[in-house]
Image (cartoon, rainbow, N blue to C red):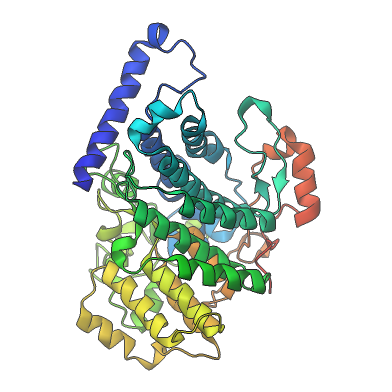
Amino acid sequence: MKKFSYIFFLTGLLLFLSACEKGFDSVNNDPNNPSTVPTAYLLTSAQRSVVTELMGRNSDWGIDVTPRRYMQHWSATLYTETDRYQEIREDFSTFYSGGLQDLTEIIRLNTDETTKYEAAKSGPNENQIAIARILKAWVFQNITDIWGDVPYSEALQGDTNYSPQYDTQESIYADLIKELDESTDQFVDGDISGDIIFNGSIDKWKLFAQSLKLRLGIRMSKVAPALAKTAVQEAISKGVFTSNDDNALYLYLTAAPNNNPWQQQYDYGAPEFAITTTMIGKLTSLSDPRLAIYANPAENSGKFVGMPYGVTAAVAGSYGASNVSLPGDKVRQATSPAILLTYSEVLFNKAEAAARGWINEDAEALYKSAITASMQYWGVTDSAITSYLAQPAIAFNKITFQKSIGEQKWLALYMQGVETWSEWRRLGYPELVVAPDAVQNRAIPRRRGYPQSESSLNQTNYDAAVARQGPDLMDIRIWWDKE
């Protein structure tokens, strides 16, 4: 039922937009007012936009790909500049002008007395607003974790403010927690239409909101431990994911343009990324059954062969894509989902909370359950999971829990580049080797540089952010990233 509902709304969205184009002059007299768009279509459009911009493949490969490379999950087969930390400033404006704008419009249409009745045809106003707020929180959490201080409180105001101020990451995190709590409490009975991620299930959206709050709480552990502890305890008390059935996934379809963009790239384009020697080596040394899922054997040898990381384009090009392991079929099929947040991550975060003494649960048991949940998600057999967990190298160390959790999270968060990078910055594990041919002897980046246009189009606020946060460089630590 979920698949057919998804197809209906994507098809309807395409037909609606086509009709708008054909009857533009007579029907859509005000091109700047999208209030005639059914909010179900806006939600579908927003979800597709924010997920694809962050985690899929667009003209810039999707923003999530860069930290996948920083974290040595993937390496370029030829163009290795990003692997060697050359500064490439990606633009965050597409978030603000795309999916975030749609989500803001959903809130407006369901709040305005002149439009809320019509909007309610897609589901209760309260539920549509709550879902839009939760998804906005997920997007902004990713944006601020990439850049640090970013436009937030004055963003998305349309033509009333073209130069929004930059909010501190600390204040953004505080407001995101508030948004997640208020939206969780805002839901009423009744599902909504147009929701790809949870098919309109308000119960799962509530769990997602609090699982995201748990993520935020753990992320603040070094810089605001008291606030972090409270956020973690509250989130768990309100209810977080309890199985892989709760995972927040964006479900792609079999046919273009709604199939997984990585399927299009690897089936019909050049294989520009391969699995690194770092990743292949770690999975192999641990006899990790996810190896054959995360990677394919090299075409020519039939063996798992990693791509050297952080080398020059000339060296990378000498290997050839057919001689190294490319991303596994399971992560680049037409219907392979994009991952927003999983049960496995929730368990890792609970394990850390227990290790810190914030919750009265068994940290080691939660740690093992987190690994189990990750492997079960990828289809690993129970016997293989049992054998894996029995290895001394996998044992949980309560004294150095950051190392135990950090190393296993790095493996479990595959295909979630921003989250992998964020947890590596926070925990410091695994201990990754800097790219041997790093540009200007740079270290692994701690943040992305602001879009080039910001220093000219929004100079006053850009300058204030740089003065507060530090030089607009990749080695500057953001608020929660403390040694």
